[in-house]
Length: 146
Image (tube, rainbow, N blue to C red):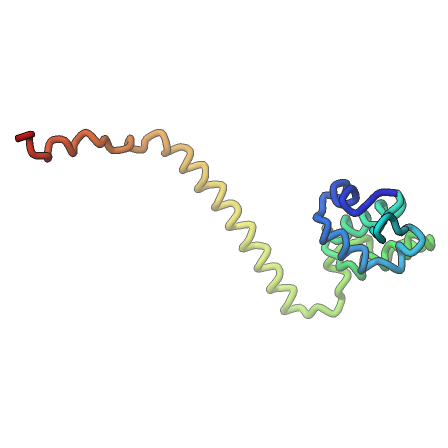
C-alpha cells in the first residue's frame, strides 16, 4: 500500500486533487483504502488503477460521477452505453446549445491556427529587428570637463 504523496506522483495530480478524487469515489474504493500511521490514508494497487481510470474518463469529458458509474459498470461486467463520447452523455442538450458549442470549437480552432501563423511570422521577422540602442550616444551631449 502506498500513501497519498506516492499516489499523487504516480497519477500526475496534486495531493489535494487525489484527496478530492478519493472522497468522490469512496464507495468504489471502500475495500482498497487502509489507514497507516497517524491515520494517514493508504491505497492499494487496485485503488490507484480505479483513480487512474476516473482521471482518464474525466479527461475525455465525463464528470467524476459519470466516471464512477462507468467503473461500476465495468466492475459488474456491463458494457458502457455510449462508448465514452461526451456529446452523447447529455442527450438533453438542445440544438441551439449544440450550435453554440460548435461555434465555440470553430473559434478556438481558428484562433489556434492564427496563433501558429503569428508565431511563425515573429520567428521569421525576429532576425530583421534592430539591435539594442547603444548607450555611448549620451557622452556626446554631456558637457566637456571643466
